[in-house]
Image (cartoon, rainbow, N blue to C red; front, side):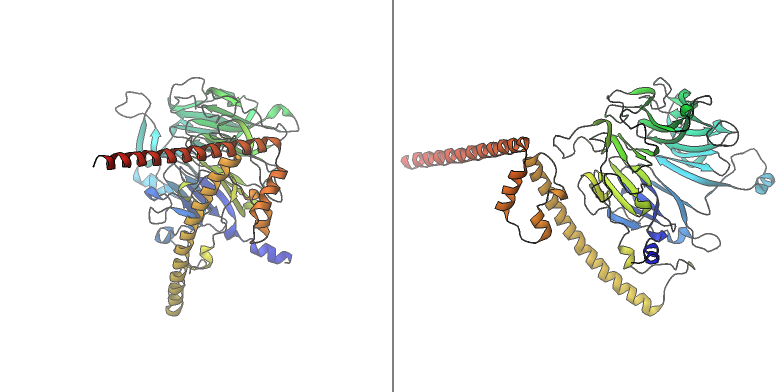
Length: 546
């Protein structure tokens, strides 16, 4: 394959430029401006027109709502996912109403309308930054209600509301959890780079605001560790349900930039990475990350945290070994339990253990998705219910698994719009062929789903059986070499080879498993024999009474 062919095969429609994860769904944005979704479909969060789950990435057909006033097809430039909702920002932007309600109608008409330039979401809250650097919010937002007498509460708003506290400043980045918001705001009126101040407000029951106490705030307050005079320059922020993570560099470190991940808030599942399960009311550096790695991305799940380095390393920590799995997860091996310090997520591939060219990481409630290889490959791990991992399976994965990307579906289905003109393809013969092809594809997809369902059950059974015997879940590398290379399998020979290659600890475990299994079988045989004797005695006694 020559260079031009390889370059052409990696077109923008296959390149993921942004990823977002919600409670149990995932969104991906491609270079050609299309949005894909997969996972749990309840409440319509996938935008597919139904509440059905999707086990593979499917393109979102915005159809009528995607047309601009000029009749051209819109491209999307940013995405965000809350717990049960999704946001997608089009290139022609969403216009907001004027924040100044005291101007007369003629003055308002003469003003240039505000436009959204960035969106974020978390919990049941949505955030937007406009082209002037002002912050807007809607959904369940932290604000004073008319009935709360000045106390903190979450108030539902169905329309965007401006956050007036930052008037005269520029909001550069923002993130939110279930009840709290953290914003990086310019010290002056405009952002000049490196002059960001960290503000937080909202619910603070676990110290997730980083203000040194557990009192909630109705209005933004400065996190003093990252105030205007601090030597730490914050450049990234993420929020979990009740914890916060920041990336910052030390301005005093000289020529070599020292990158540090700071966390605070709820720590009972190790999501702070401090080596303990205690909560933190003030920002503390994560322990266990190498000092010579420059961190480029951070994201938080419900109770876990992940970071990516410029060198291609990925670390996670928190609930269920940083995978974000809930305590009822089926993994019961020796590696089960929460990770209170960062764990390096290894990649089993030609470039392993580092991921090739990592781009972005997104943490859902209990799963993690990584975009790598310059945006052309995706990996996922964690809880797999509802198909949220995008690999066609619905069970948990305890190691990164390749996600089906790019989706094969669009190679078979007739597109509803011509991308260049925005006009529907509706010619008779072409439409008939497309309809027939869609029927064939639909039947094939149904058959494939049935096979995938059967495969998922078999894989789950294999994993449980393998875990019972060997103390760890089944992985592809555990498959015997003879079975990988051919369809024949000599179980006696493979068992002998496995025993020969096992260390003493593994052999002892196998012996214990064998003894327990043998004892269980003998016990069952004895019980069966006792039941038979009892039945015989009862039968003899009954016959003797006649």
